[in-house]
Length: 312
Ligand SMILES: Cc1cc2nc3c(=O)[nH]c(=O)nc-3n(C[C@H](O)[C@H](O)[C@H](O)COP(=O)(O)O)c2cc1C
Image (cartoon, rainbow, N blue to C red; front, side, top):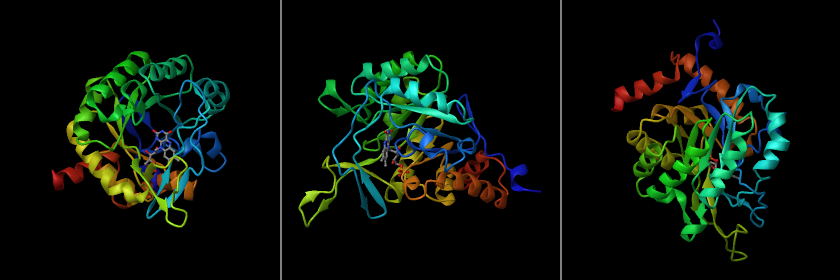
């Protein structure tokens, strides 16, 4: 018997059924099409698009990336083609694939989030929305939407009303005092799932030039360095809400995936690892199937049940 026959890697994120729990993360997989010659998109659980805004954004000055111990910093500045160009130029090609396309949505005002969703609602080809709430709110003096439970509730409620057709995932900021509080605010306002979490604000200086290594001065830390910190956030969020959670932060290996699934993530996303190995998401799907087969686990829920039985 081959492992493919015995192991069922499919997962439900609310009403949305995914082929397996491995998705490529926003901002690290372009609009999916850029990776289609390297990865069988149809073999993934899905992928999340680069963040989409109402108008195109050129992004932050170079340099935009730098390496750090066990990770990297990025300050891309949410560069994207804008939602209308995404619909006109990317979505028609994406419809040819049998994979879950999740549209990552961001804005600087509530109206921005609503506008992006409204444009997408009128078009086929997107399976869910992922709201990035780690964005400065221009009406509140640049305070992040995601750091205040009241603001999170406001943006999720507004998006919920606009997103009549599709599930709404909310991608939380890790820079919060109590992730449970924010998670409950998102759930209470109508989120169907949570994505935990985004990058950590951080900085790196080149002491030879005495300049920041990023054109934007500060950036977001991602990669293996953040995995243990984000893992705890997923664990805390899991205890706070009933809706499914997608975990991401520093995933590179099958063991990393299993750690997130064990503590209660229903699925995971792979970000920075795609920069060093563009085929990593595909490799993780294959490796996960093998690992489940060898451990005599036949559904994704079984690993969580075992962890809960051991640790409560
Ligand atoms: C270059 C880069 C661009 C990103 N752009 C976005 C984005 O547009 N929207 C978003 O929600 N997250 C964005 N992220 C965050 C990732 O989706 C992910 O949350 C983060 O990198 C942590 O996962 P990782 O350690 O696997 O990379 C970006 C990350 C990187 C490295």
